[in-house]
Image 1 (cartoon, rainbow, N blue to C red):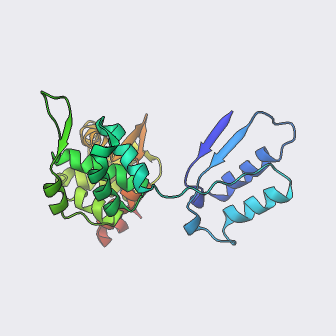
Image 2: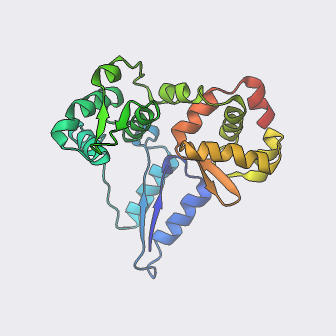
Length: 235
């Protein structure tokens, strides 16, 4: 069994204790836990780091891999694969994307989606090849800050859809649909329509009777748009 746990910088004490019990159980075999966390958000006094140190003392088999940002060559490989073209052809586009995103993987994907949504990437129906106008791309005013970039995208949403997103951001985590309905004061059918719009643009994901943000940076951007009164309403 392999379990992947993301955002361990936010792990709660109960979950951390459960992991300790599982990973120190000598009778538990064929079990692998892969955990990801932002090392710039933890220090030696963080519960996660204390827990890791305790596991090391227990001689648990631990390995660490530090993931770096994408290189310009990585971004070019992504662009070439996405657009089904030769890496030499996609290199100018990749260079521009890399300059804006600095190799942040999430930001890179978001920017490529944005270029598609803005019709700056287009598929030629006759040649079946993707095209782009480098002059137009270079003229785009795209911030190099991922949250600011997402905030710009959120401002393009309809007001009622943005309101749902802001309420969801104030609640956070896996958000029960029933709770979000009460927070937004709308019927579930109406909420479903608004959520579908957010699913379509890859802002949120549905989890049966709950929903959550596709990425914590999206939640951060949406929360930054909440007024003090909206934050107090959720609290």
